[in-house]
Length: 342
Image (cartoon, rainbow, N blue to C red; front, side, top):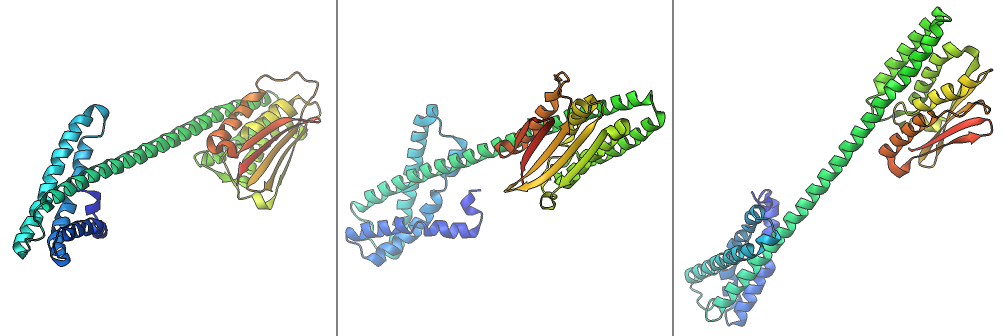
């Protein structure tokens, strides 16, 4: 069904839009010598019928898209269709003229003028239908492109999440393995804490975002697992401004950062050190900081950038240029600052 015919209100508006065409025919007929009322009585039903005839290009345009090789054939098709539609306009006007006994409306050159106007209007209707179908096709292509980009983005985010889980699980199991040869009770305690952490992380892993307070709590939960191994050598400090507690961030975003802080920072220090988590509100954003001490004399680790690259990719896929990440050494502290829209 033609989209104009679906709601009745559209049909009324469509017929009203033909008023200028009716006025044109009435004025042309009056200029040829017919009274206004006679011309109005004859052309009103004729224009009404012709208005619905001019909807027929919709189906032809849909069946035969406007492509360069097919243009000559389409010109022939629509010229013939315009002639038939124009004859229908002229025929309806002739029948009405005879029924109302108003012969002055269609006489002499008026027959040819009405036929020519009908053809031009039908061809104009054809062009408008092609324009509407082209706009619809463009919107549909844009919708599919947006949907494809969304699916690709979701797939990439899911891929990044799947990369994350084995990474921290491997590190945690390695820590438990190392501890088991030293202190079985602490290794068991670490297993229980790890199980609690995994339970919490699996609960939020499928969510698109979680509050900052929950994300920081997950990071602290992981650090508690590591504290079983490092004892007093690992100290944790967390400071969250109340204004940013409810800001949404991707789940497990801080996980690679706190892993790096322990593995490449605290683990290499004889006396241990502190991992500091902080979140503060900024205009339109929340800034999350992860800091840790490190041994400046230790050789640099090659795999330090894996976790940073992972976090940077997640931010880029999720937020584009709206998010940022800064990482580097400040004094004897390694600092990572994430800025996420809020």
